[in-house]
Amino acid sequence: MNGKHYYKTKVVKVGKWALLPLDGETWFGNKSSDYFKKYFGIYKGGLYLCSDGLFHGYLAKDLFENLKRRIIGINKKNYQALEKKLQFFYTLKKSAQLAITSDSKLQYSKLSNKQLANRFLFIRDWVRKVTIFDQFGFIGEDFLLSLAEEILVNKLNLVKKSPAYNEVLFALTKPEAISTTLSEKRFILRKAIDIKNKKTSLEKASKVLAKKFGWMPVFCYGIPWDDIYYQKELTVVLKNNLQKLEKDYLKLKDYKRNRNNEIAHLVVRYKIKAQDLQKFIDFGLALDGRNEAEYFVSFSGFYLLPLHKEIAKRLSVSVNQVRMLFEDELEDCLNGKKDINKILNSFGKVRGFGFNREMSKRFIFSGSEAAKMFKYIEKNSSNAQGNDEIQGICASSGKAKGTIRIIPSPDYNDKVKAGDILVSYATTVDYLPAMKRAAAIITEVGGLTCHAAVVSREFGIPCVIALKNAMTNFKDGDLVEVDADRGLVKVLQKSK
Image 1: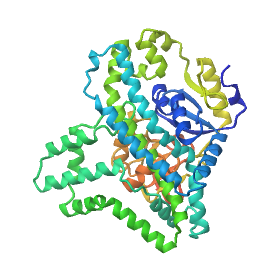
Image 2: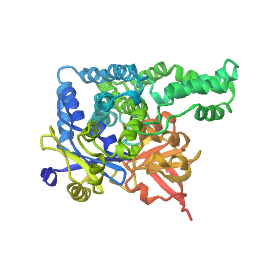
Image 3: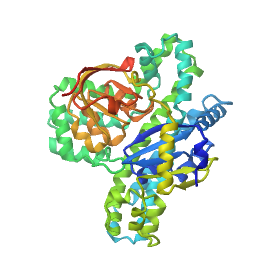
Image 4: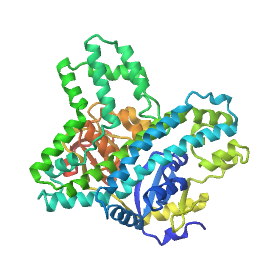
């Protein structure tokens, strides 16, 4: 049996996401591990099992130590070396966007099956290159955070997890580049101001927004935002008076200067040395690389949507059935080497893959192997975060009161109304429609660089992450109070 070493290896569960095998392979396949090794110096192979539409990820504890040693080694001669390495993300993302859009007007219906497969793999390969920065963020987070925490507690004399501690940590790790989330918000405000000043119409502004940002919630197979969506968004924003719109817009227009001024103020106030500040800069870049890499998955996902549909049409299956395959299987089916129905019929309830002990080579489990492994590993692994049912981690400060809405996947986004409390295993970009309406967010897994954490801070709403069993301990309709600074969620009234 492949993967016998997993029965002896200490592993931690790093998350579970509403993904299917083809989706999850983007981040976790062997080619992704090869790119990680090429750029960061180590393989990152893990164990990944898909069951009931959820993709579960596990990593050997050794991997975290290996990356820690690599980070120390990178910075050994020059304490700014890691920053330079992480800055490459922005250059790479720009190249990837240009490459993906260069042939975006191809008529897929006119391509041969081989050409169709090649185009699909071409886009996916760019995604793999970019998402190694997402992987770096969550594998390296605990170590990078520990370096920042040491400075906050031992040099700045802040009480760990106190409101002041969180405020300084979040400010010092704020990325210099404005995020996609805030860029969209800024553009919406700009268009709302133009509408107020009669420089454009609601209809024209909505079409511009849809063209520029409509791809955002796609992720793996979400629904793009169209002009109707943005008409609704703008209608809500336009309820504010012109003075408030301009004030909010200027704050985002000067994002970089405001961010730099805030950090400069804290440097003076706490007398932070350059080498200490560098720890926060590195953490902020890891955080931004992780968040923006996920947005790039959405960007590329938007261009993969018609490919998914054309492939499904040619293979006479549904898009979700296509997403149950792995890349090699999909390529073989398109090239006539394998029968897709035989592959689909061979599945058990669990699909998955692992790597050899050295994490350099991947193997795919049979259905029975995957089911056996899943049963064992779920009993014998701890969570990287989220081992406490009482108290989670503050990812974005503040308090909120509202009604719980359990969102196991983006298919349930519409359940969340304005002022509700969104609860999920973890969020990804395709949860954005619901996140925009939520008064607070709670997740079972994740760290300070995860999607829910970053977006909540950008939205200015409370967020508690890594609250074990939140999806089962709360019920739809429960009225709760979220005290994010303390990582606590109190049930005020249970649903009937």
